Image 1 (tube, rainbow, N blue to C red):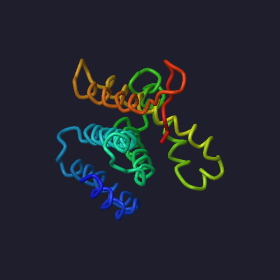
Image 2: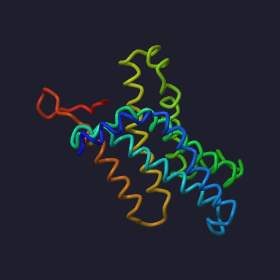
Image 3: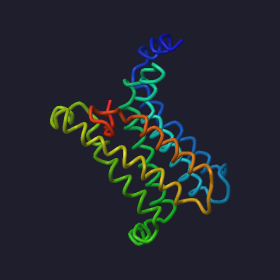
Amino acid sequence: MVDALNTALRRVPPWTLYILAPLPVAWIYYLGLTGGLGVDPAKRIEHQLGLWALWLLIAGLAVTPLRRWAGLNLMRFRRAIGVITFFYLLAHLLTWLVLDVQFQNVWADIVKRWYITVGMAAFVMMLPLAVTSNDYSLRRLGTRTWRKLHWLIYPAALLGALHFVLLVKGVQWEPVLYALVIIGLLISRIRPASRPGWGRITQA
């Protein structure tokens, strides 16, 4: 079953993900413009795009555990998933800037509101990953440096989960569940090292 699925996936070029990526964004904005997202469409659009970014972030983190534990090989799609994750994160940020706060008191909100501070920190960490997610950057930086730079995805993922937890009022299970899934995926990437009691996070 898994072998057949891997064979089928090898026939799918990664660039198809880039073609499909804008469709949910267009649909979400269409619903907002046509009244399908309630009385505060800007907030709903912002929230939906943030959720998509979180889902894609989880999908990218799940690639290695799925290969290791289930034999499902999605490595060909990991770079595309990462770039598309940043695309949704950028759309989420721009929606907040343009439609929500309308460029008013932006710096004050970043400084005073913890969930915005954490979210901006995650975005800043994701920016160099998106810029260097190409073969040219890999050659220029070298494999070792490139991999170390892309370790930023781990703290960025944790900050993204924390952003969602801080965003909601009171204790809600949905953001906590996402946080636990991300933490679990990060833990699953730790491989025991040669010294007892030590481990390392694998980039593969």
